[in-house]
Length: 235
Ligand code: HPA
View 1 (cartoon, rainbow, N blue to C red):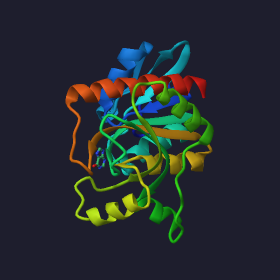
View 2 (view 1 turned 45 degrees about the vertical axis):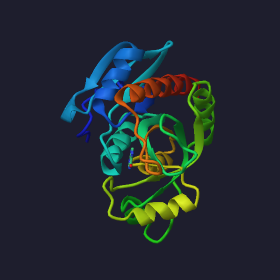
View 3 (view 1 turned 120 degrees about the horizontal axis):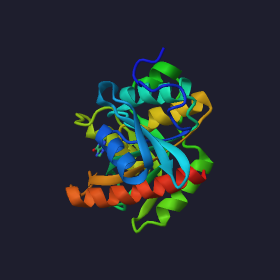
View 4 (view 1 turned 90 degrees about the horizontal axis):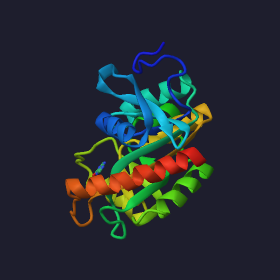
């Protein structure tokens, strides 16, 4: 039963980029892929397949947060046989050395989400990236002119949180940045025996209050997408 992605079997490549925003999926496909074809418009959560330097690649919007991403990631792996998934998103810096416009590559994640509490009950499972995929992604990110940080991120369910103290505790333990999806992606990829990684541009700093302008966000986002496409066809 496929209920959220309207593609026919075979329409989705085995390597997929996952932006949260469906219009970013459209922009990535139309800017970087040869012969992009839109395979799904269900709920306007756009998905495209095309070629990047001769290799088939898809781009699928996931929406925001772990419940939404989980629906798309599950269906991509369980119904369409996707093997390699890279989230391309944005994050907020939690530590002073992480500046706006930098790239954060998520090695592992901590989360406040109920999703893995439901799945694992009392066990603290550690959602972790695929090492080989992450290594290639880090290599390609380091070719850009952005500063690259590799480490743990927080995948938070609550954007407008009433509990900044919990975030601060993670910061004390070295967590670099906060976003809302990577933990679910890494957990589901592990469950399905597939490979996943995530890279985020730093859109704002919870340390300094700095924010990127729309123009800066676009420039760093482009570098991140170019690095991710280069990595996903190599990995
Ligand atoms: N919280 C969660 N996700 C984010 C943030 C944030 O502050 N900034 C950018 N993505």
